[in-house]
Amino acid sequence: MLILGIEASGNSASVALVQDEITLASVTRQDRHGHAGWITEMVDSLLAEAKSDFSAISHIAVGCGPGSFTGIRVGLAAAHGYGLGLGIPVLGVSSLASLAYGADADHRALALIDTRRGHLFAQMFSGGKAISEVYDASQDELVDHLSAHLSQDDHQGAAGLFVHGCAASTIADILSKRGHVIPQYQDADPDAIMAASMVASRLANGETEADFPATPHYHSSPLLGPAKAKLGQG
Image (cartoon, rainbow, N blue to C red; front, side, top):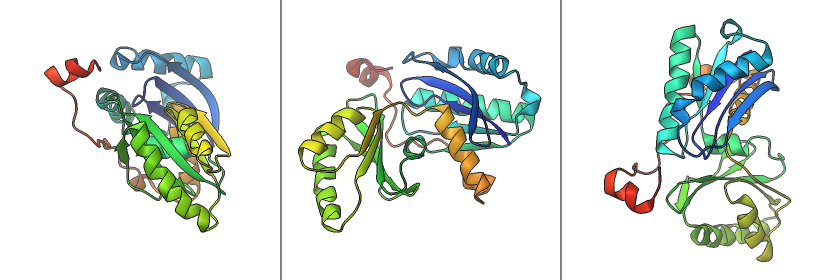
């Protein structure tokens, strides 16, 4: 399998080529806006860097959010366009799940994505499986909620928490000061390498293309018109 990964739901856009969970090449742009304007150029640059071409690609993995409303649509539109043109399957992944991918199996993972409206999307994972709903909360609300649940889990002998995503270092620092075990943390955006690597791993372990519907994961309504201008978000 040679998987083209596309991810644009966060504060950056990225594409990657992954074969057997090995990254052959990747391209990232950190710009917060304008993903639609360069996503195809990024893919062309990616193929040139990897010395490959479209005919070699067997699957497309795309981040479906939650995250930037526009970014999710850009990523999915590009993925479906390539999939239709190449006649290959498009597999959608939760951007929160891909952030949690690769966490130490002995620890739970907390994935965090910027909502672009002053909150964080957050979800807990264990062994690669979601063990909570998706939270949409301020940092203070999230930390209070997590602290209460982690205290209960600690009494049951649960291992520490891996924190990955937007504001991960801040959340990890506050939780550590409250006495919780945080063995790993990393500030990061969801990226195409994570999405493609997770798909490669799960397909190799028996999951099928049907397990990855390429549909958007929206958890709040888009900001349009006056509401968008008031918050100053794009």
